[in-house]
Length: 55
Image 1 (tube, rainbow, N blue to C red):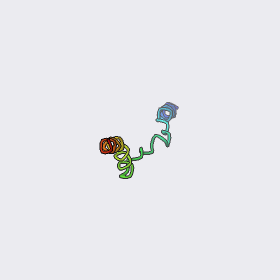
Image 2: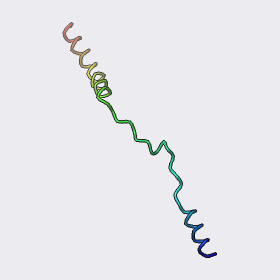
Image 3: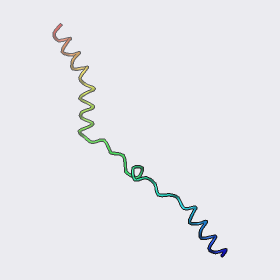
């Protein structure tokens, strides 16, 4: 009986399985995302260069 009680407490102490959403790796940024970000950041500078060239 004592052995059964020990086995039951050990079974109850086991960690619950984590959610699958936590186990999934976060998506890594791709080269396309990096190019898109670089293009978006350079747009104000390109617009400023055009404004300076016109005026």
